Image (cartoon, rainbow, N blue to C red; front, top):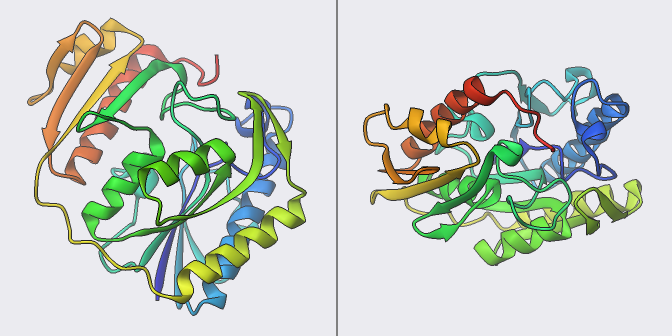
Length: 276
């Protein structure tokens, strides 16, 4: 059994503030170790369920957060950027399941460190008219590749968002939201035991793979900056909805890769910190 772990940081046990998750933040070094421990709990659960190969993709920010020496020895690490597939780099149809560790709710939700990919620069996103953030787009893309999402960990809002998107996915809430930068925390040892147990249980019966996508989807993104939307119209296939909103059609996962190009264009134009 081959397991793929996409590891974000905002939904990791104990972390609530930009200072916890941004390089240079007062508590970032502690935060990256907390991230590794949540990931390691998921790896232990996968191994207990019979995984023979575990790939971990560091999917947060600079994508160099997990220290290789801090990772469970049973896992291989994909680290650094740029990556064509971003948060899903290295995911292939040969994987049996995806585990999303440390995920957060989408922009506009009152979840801990909530945003969609680029902090306040992306105001809203829709996939085929359905509100979407990192959770929904990762799930839809993994399904298009033919690999089911088995488990998601994060705060209670992230877990609720995943359940709304796909109620068959097991979730682990490691903290309960009090506000965007405040949470009621589970004790780390309790949270990690829950992650390990949930992953082992979810993988004990191999998740059912979906058929790879064949039909095109429409991705719509509303940006804070009209400059970003205007510039993206130079990309073939991108059309305008209004002065700050663009959309494109395509078959996932190609559409996901195209969105990665949009983000790189936006970053070159704005270069703004993610939690303002």
